[in-house]
Image 1 (tube, helix red, strand yellow):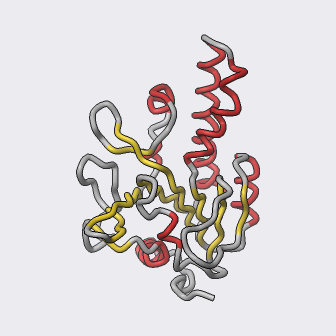
Image 2 (cartoon, rainbow, N blue to C red; image 1 turned 60 degrees about the vertical axis):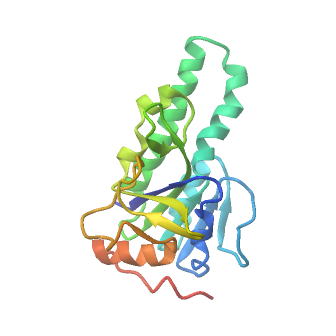
Length: 216
């Protein structure tokens, strides 16, 4: 099984910026939104918001680590493409069921079909629920009740900005769902360098892999 990792944060909090040291053959990027990266350079990969294509890219990738950037827009785009024709009542309920099923199936595909030595990072925006807890942004309470997204991940990192620095939060803090295994990270906050995070995760789970911090 591959290792799925969830990364959440506000827009501009440093999610995509954390990829700045991932510009080498050990990384692929699946962009759900066709927007430029917030730094110079590039990461090889694909642009698609189609679940089946995303799954094909995950299997086709030769890289050890794969990022699905703006993964939350798989949910948003699915909703925006289908809500106008869904009508009302049971049809709307069915649309939300489909949205939940598709995203759940993607995570299950990562866990069961993507090779064991690979790590797949899903980046999503965050939001506060009715109780004030910070969680991955979805659409509607029905989806949240159907699929507890953060519950499908052992590692959830939250991007924040603190004193002008972009950081990852590694454990639950300030009502957020951040979490990681015991002893994986040395502190509550770390630099938001995904290449360094990748090395830590690979060492912890003994996944092997090359020094991903080396850029082209």
